[in-house]
Length: 360
Image (cartoon, rainbow, N blue to C red; front, side):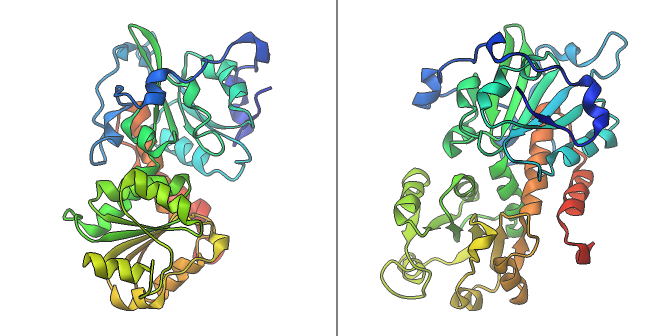
């Protein structure tokens, strides 16, 4: 049975009763075109071009369906899909955005271990279901249940956003990825328009590291991959282009310093996708030499990680995972609704949920 966790009991009346698992069939195996990486229509344009505040997508073929018979905005249903995600800030962030714009939409948390149980539910098939966020462990498991993937989703190998569109041919489920936008936008703001040149040191080799590599490539930054399992880092270098370093020392075989000297390059950005508990820090020689370094830690909790404490103590510019969280959420909002998101509202809600007590 579908497990729907809600931020408030007041949301309960509109939720459909879950259907027996046998009531519907899943969409079946991954279409050959998706497996082959064939060129498919993108999800929505905003996450494909250089990200901006306004959505660039075309109007739906069935635009009138967004209003009811009286002309009022039709309530739409959105959710975040994942497992063991009670901590998620997304329901509060998106719900606040709808309220700020006086939109009747709802956004809930759906916690289910098997993605198949979600796509067999009444919620998924409801005509008012218009999209969802997707998080662990479903970012790849959702692939077989989608009709199309954006270029970003294919390259990163993960979907964090599903957009549901109604057209003359029926319903289309598009998979997209805004995680990279959550990395791209904060870095572009700090690096400026002339972002090309210099390098990005990416620590880690999981799904977020792939989004970081994609964003760094779009920013025109050379990629240097570091992971305790070098073969995993090599996979990223093979797919996104770049150099694997096996040590962060200034000199020596396989070192970051050696790779930079050989390329005549500098590091402009450090992006850590490692868990905060790993205690990752950058070497002091890099701190000394790169005074304009931007340090990005994708963790949004805890607010102060060892890496961020080190960077702030050295006077370096930092980007927290909380900023990534609201930036990717803004991207989702604009993909779903084709209108500007209330940026400051979404930012405020994330910070209210992420700031430690002493910083509130």
